[in-house]
Length: 356
Image (tube, rainbow, N blue to C red):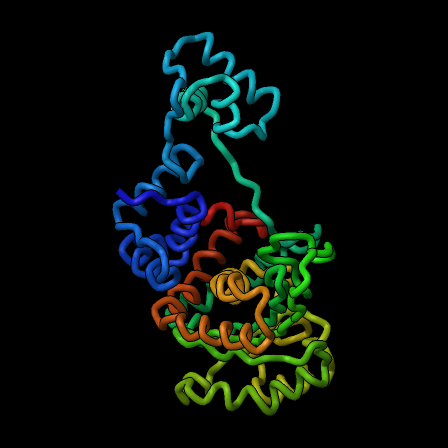
């Protein structure tokens, strides 16, 4: 039987969410994303999901040699006392400290009604943010009720910066950071690069990537919209382009008067953003498919190329975008409907922890 690492099990969970919680689709997607790994069966993947839901851990329990298996009231009390002292304790740490099995700790916690909760990095919301988020989501859902294909009309867009330290979205918040970007990493031959990327997604189509200059200004962004966007949309059907709704967030370059005037002319009453006819709620990357799917999917493309040249990384990014299938794109863009429903249900507050 194949043995999988904790990271591989974690990737199975992430892929399961990306595949719309469909086990067979998740197995296929995992094979596409990690072609050089041993691929799990559908049974292995679904057991991993079930294990996470029941125990809070993706890794199967393995009893260490010499672990005490005796289950008595005194042992339960010792386990609960450890978690009472430090709620952030891990099952493995407590099991090791008490010389018992991981499964015994899990069973004791379940019997006592205790569950594990994992911290999740999210965009900080300000006190006045909830109502605009609710207003946007309610409007979006109302349009979906009138026209089931409404989500397929929206061109979702965003920019991100790829560096050796991870993927950053400077006008929203840091995503997928693996180390302090200000820390100095010793290495005589380490490459230094930062690659700015614009991309979009509409229905089942990926638009881009398009590589941006190091510093994006309102003037440069307007030139992208005026000169490059029409060419990037050439493969989008004419009937879709005729009703296309353009979306971007409230980044400074997006809010310039030149950009807003251009969007008013190109997409009259059909664009989302700060100061637009459809107000995009501030600090809402959890409602943008580029933020909640694309950048995280592309990130592994640079993990093995941190010391490569900028050109090598650019080529890797393009190659990674090419692996996003129409089915993957369609599932990701349609996921916004469920996100909007949960956002409204949660009063405009953080909601991604309730998705899975």
